Amino acid sequence: MPTIEVKWFAGRTNDQKARLAKAITDAVVDIGETTPDATHIIYHDIKKSDWAQSGKLVSES
Image (cartoon, rainbow, N blue to C red; front, side, top):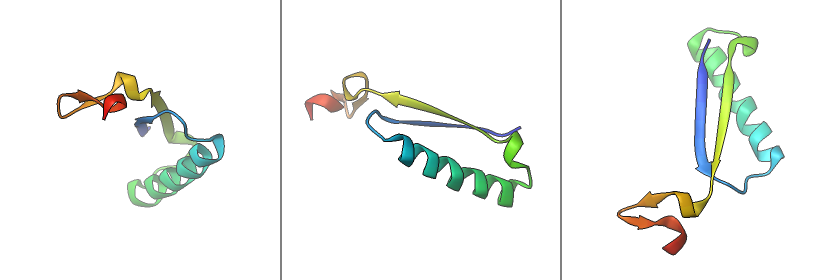
């Protein structure tokens, strides 16, 4: 069972998440030779204040 985790900044709409889930599922089914029912996607919506890059909080960049 493939499980894909997407970590990104909070603020995406349910429509965006649904469209991405469909695209990822289609690719995993095609390339990974699995089924849609076996494919799981977990979204981690992270606040910019909880993410740092290059030694700085992204919210302060």
